[in-house]
Image (cartoon, rainbow, N blue to C red; front, side, top):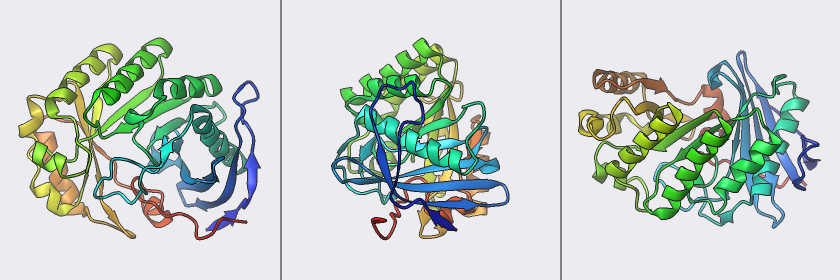
Length: 313
């Protein structure tokens, strides 16, 4: 592991952006494997709060590099498998653009920024983007700074009008810009009892998610990904047929990842194969979203919060 860049500051990576933001990078690790490379960065906000970000490049991370950013400092949902700290505040659109600026500057320094400017901005670190106070404005600001970027927006779909309004804003943003957006809803269970036990915050029911999935599919021509973060024991309680009627394979596909405990995934190869078999038999397409060994060892897997030991000063 190479640890460099302590205390460096990165200004806007896009000179055409009129958003005056600069986030100090108080530390970052760069790890290079045979087929993948990861940058794990810790940035300081203007109020002194620090947030973790990551950038992944290579075979294990899909069709393009990703820049994983936070929508808030901490998270208000408090999922049982997640170690992200308690919610502090939403990040401003300017700060969110600043996160991407910092990550892409680091990626360019290490030679892993794509020459065609195509990468995916992934809302998968701290925070629940569907509860953000300015999600629409954040997406507009990102689009202005990085017009060729794609997006991944991952939400657990909390109950309430704020979430619904934000997700309809995402539909509107996609319709107007034609942006490549992967929308992921963390479902975690095939019964509302199991889903409700995942987080302390009340979550939207399957009917609400199903109706939104139909709107999303009609507007974008794409499916929503339903994510399950599970261990072997959780797989035994999943019944795909219980949700198939209301969350149909025409509008939804499935992604599975394992709960990570320390440096160990609680989803074994046998558990993964059992999951895959059940959902494919029910007619769903299933994507393998399990963390790579490098992500687990470097603490950059979603839901894992491993800050640097010091401030870097």
